[in-house]
Length: 234
Image (cartoon, rainbow, N blue to C red; front, side, top):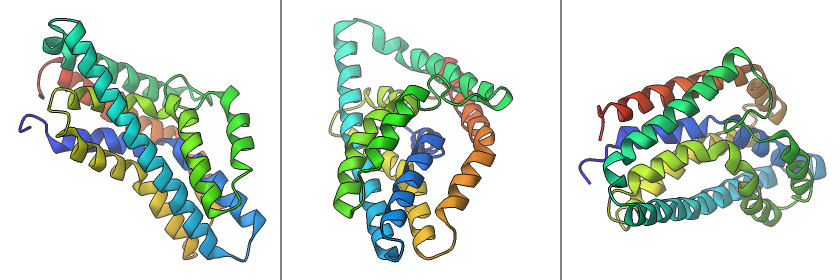
């Protein structure tokens, strides 16, 4: 346990947290609630938190599955554990370069960095059904399947790192990872509720800064990958 450092998990979770996909989906949920009942700001708060909680729970379960898959792979492929960190390091470098590429040459729906374009109409149609707190929670569970293509990268790398420790010991790490992952969603929901900002402003900020979000995520992932590849971290 001592070999696994909290900053590495926080870095990966932070990269996941600034992913434009999750912010965009939350904005769509809040807009849909506001359109259906514009006077009920409390409903916006509860729906946003319900959606976020659904994401938290579902992603936690995904994390357990990812870790188990890595543990099974280590058992099946003899000797892979020795090289697992370096394999994950290469994956992190590739993911980092893809995000950096999106800064210099941005196109919506980038491979492994954003939700594919063909999935977006399906997500919008699904979200349009969320007009209640309960609906936001249920939609949050289903939407995670569509978010996976653009958020799974850092999570897989974190899962690979966690697979090297005892399974029960991974649970606190997953709880921390997913808490960091959903913090921006919680902050946005509360900010909209108290009137500090509007959903339109949040969506506009995301659109204006999407290239910089990719750049920050890309640099972090690239440096972390290099450190893992050359054995600078364990």
